[in-house]
Amino acid sequence: MARMTNTGIEVLEAELQRIEKGMRGSAMTAMLNAGAEVLIGAWQDEIRESHRKTSARDLMASSVNKTEIRYTGDGASIEVYPMGNDTGHRITNAAKAFILHHGRQATRKGTKEIKGDKFVTKAERRKKAEVMAAMQNAMNEFIGGKE
Image (cartoon, rainbow, N blue to C red; front, side, top):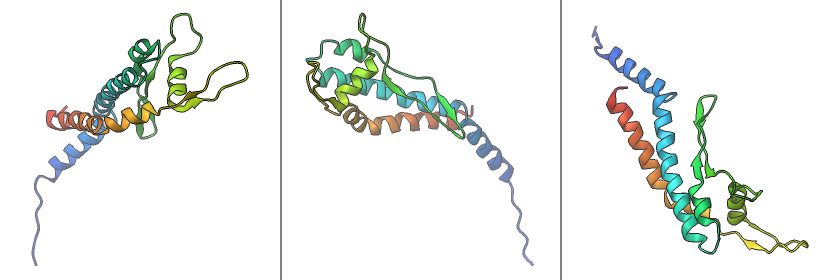
């Protein structure tokens, strides 16, 4: 009867466990931060390009930032959006971005209608490949770096 011998399986198992542990720690953090940095640039470029007539566009564009990483169950997420307020205004930059993205109907109190231009969707679609590449590079560094 034939006999089969395996060598090196323990090394493979250890490497897979290291990668799995990293996907819950430093690798996941690096991947999310790398993707978020690309998205921040995409949002800023799109705000400056799409909203040339908006008086606070540079301030809103410069306020785009990322949140802390949120861990949920076996996954994690990070959000990118304009943070803070304009000086002297009560409305947040996130609310302004929401209105510019989705639009607003005119009201009886004299507010004008704003047509939404879906600038967030445009920015995210335009940079999707770059976001994925940045995240893949972060993962490749983790796998190759043997952290």
